[in-house]
Image (tube, rainbow, N blue to C red; front, side, top):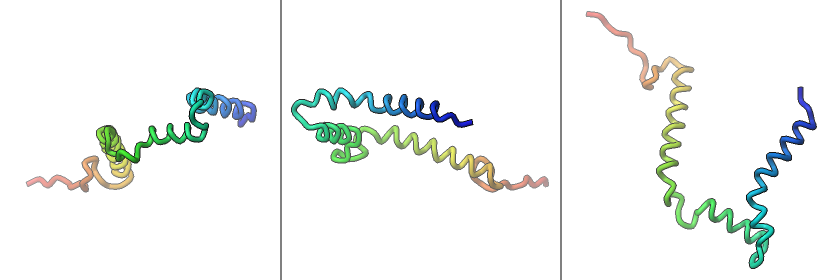
Length: 94
């Protein structure tokens, strides 16, 4: 059963947790406006100017490799593929 008060409480706590780290930048922004300060945070979080590969490629490659493995495993369980990704070939006895 959905309780609206619990949903609102969860939304308030989640929103406060996400907004909390940005409060010092908004309150203590003396030399810059709030929008300039938040734009600076976004630029530091997503450094497109330096290139996306700069210092982050190893973790991203590892994460994509793991995701690809999980997707292949899920697809192989749905189809007739073996976990190796190749079709099952019955053994032939001679």
